[in-house]
Image (cartoon, rainbow, N blue to C red; front, side, top):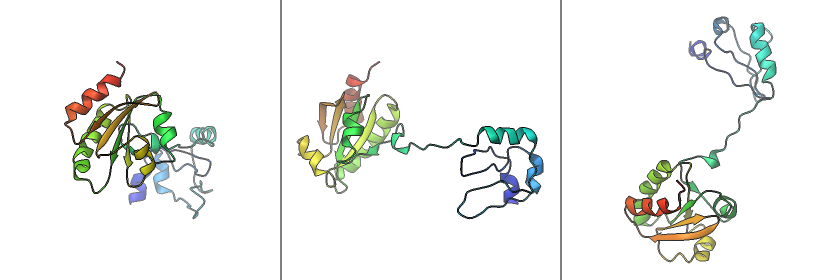
Length: 180
C-alpha cells in the first residue's frame, strides 16, 4: 500500500502537525487518524519508541519558513509596492529587466536573463518589471524602449543596456559590479 511505503520518510514537526513516523518498521502496519483541517496528530493507538517521543517533544514548536521571494538564481517580479525594498534596499548588485508581454525582443532576452540569474546566483539579484503594470517605475527611470536592462548598486542606477543584446554583453555589464 502507498501509505506503508511512505512511512519510511523523514519527519518535520510543527505546532499544528504531529509526527508521522521516522524509519520505524512497526509504524508501517499502524493506522493514522487524520482529522480534517487540524493538521496531523498522533493517534492514541500508535506506539512510538521512547527515543522518538523525546525527539518529538524537543521539536514540538519547530516550523518551516518558506522564503520563495528570496529564491536565489531566479528572476523575480518586482512591482511599485516592492521596488524600494527589493531593488533600492538590496545590499548586492541588482539587475532589472524592463519588459512587456507583447514585446518580441523581450521574449527573446528572457532566457538569457534567466541563465545569468542562475550563473550569478548569490552575487546579484535579478528582477523584472512589466512596464504595462508598473508605468511609474518605467517613467521614473526614463525607460523609452524595451527590453531595457538596468544595473543597480547600493540603490543607485549604474548602467543601462537597451535592446535584445547577446549574453556576453550583459555578462560584461554584470562583471563590472560584482565584487570578486
